[in-house]
Length: 389
Image (tube, one colour):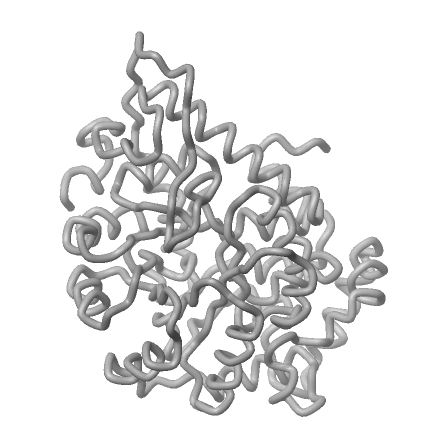
């Protein structure tokens, strides 16, 4: 099968990855209402086609946080995505670097910060959670500085983890000592390509940045148990002042869905925010990104760089989110599918597809530069996000 779209890479990943890993990447929380809503609300937004305009020279480049990007796209932090291919985060970071866009490494990556730094030649971004163990957080921030990370994405929508039914059914999420290991073993047996490349030769048991605090207990059940025990539900805006004081580079808060929270981000002194519902993996029933983005952009776009993620499956979706007020768009599942389906070459090809789709969307809506895209690119009233609902 030759991939022609992000959804083609989803199918390739489904065929190649063991069930527990594909479901982890593909799934959301509870009934996955918000997961589906992210995609559906973007699909409902009609692009306003214009004609007889000179669109012979289209410029996708943009500057974000002092960095010139080839297009207004970044690879979002995706936990454990490095298990989709051998040392997968390194492969994805290399593809992003070649495409001229940022890659963001998750706190809960398979590959540690130092390994990713060795694999690329330019700085990348890092994502951090608020963890109960502030010493661990301080060490991670120091490691991110040592790796010369150029921006910090701080995820704020996970004081407690959402329940993901697919992970329970597949055997990924279970208590240490459960039958999860056995279930995953048999799922891997029917995916021999993955089992050989990643399971046997990719050192998947090394859980990157978290391995030192697991003290040798690096099974997936041990990892998830540590995560559940160390998310901090006591965190308030006051605690984020500690983060700001310990990070002197660009600080971007991820997981904002409410305009009042967006205003608090600006008051904190952050540099940007990401309108995000964690890809539908936290509060099921939360607003889809396309609905949450416009009022937040209206409230704080003059004070912060507003980014967005969630439901993006094409370059057309990127243009839709730019038109709704985002200055840049993060791809999450899109790159994880491509990594699982085709490794570094798959991620590189997926990014070329996104770029080509953006160029077509911009040409047929009459825009020649990313900075000029606004809500006039959309048909008024074509979705509830454009009706102020």
